[in-house]
Image (cartoon, rainbow, N blue to C red):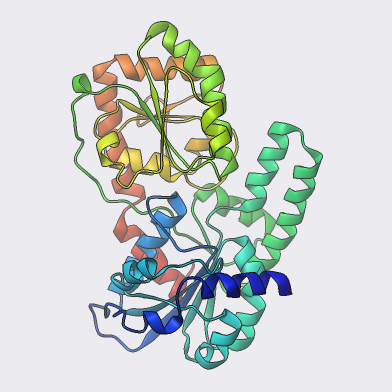
Length: 396
């Protein structure tokens, strides 16, 4: 632990002195309310171009700022840059570069709320925030239930070590939930899991948040498929390798020119392993919009995971039809053939892709229903109500 804290201190020191950030002006809340201050801690600084969790947290920042909260943010990896600080300041968020244990004694008593994001962060900081922020309402934002994701990975691979890891995560996660005032989950499925595991837990559903966008190009002017997800998240890497080996060859028997565009951080070994016809590896891109508006389908061939999949939400918010496995569709209120195509076996998944890829009427039906799904279940207003409920103590 001491070595880890020393490494984080060196990382912070390497990103410029704290004094060099003193000139950064944090946007004031647009509404004047009684002073309310919240501390948010996550594993790293959110970057909406990197992952779904970052996109969701950025939206949470916006909702809190609009409701008059003063927001302090700590990235646990200590790697925030001045550019990060400027970007978040425009959203009304101040990044602190002190160690949290040094910051809390002076500021903790002034906090009305603390939100700890993800299991490792809650593990490390729940006790100290309870002690040094005695008046704060403590929210544990699971982002996804780690033990559910790990349990599924163990079942898929048959790994005993993963099964043991899942059991340990379950113990830790349920302990954090028990110790928190409110737990945030992203899907009704995960809320149901916690209702079985901890019936007395105070749980609020706060899912992904998306605006509705223009549809982009019509069916006839679109081509190819899109997958979005960084390879640092094991379900994403597994999904692309599985799609490339089991599904893409079936598709190219019928559509020889079809390609899958893969977007997200990717390691060199995976990039090399996926170097073949039919795959276009983009890495991370600054703006997904051109791809979302020009490909014909988004695919989410996830074989394990948990939570709600931002890649599915994001595509649907642009009216881009999605072909997903049951795991990827979980918690999304999706119905096969109505607002998405859902299949699990390789042959079935390929057939679902081909059906939506070649039938303009089906494509348009899925596109319209996808946008309506996001409007109904993943809207900004719905998220605002959930967040207000969590912070007020009304979790019913």
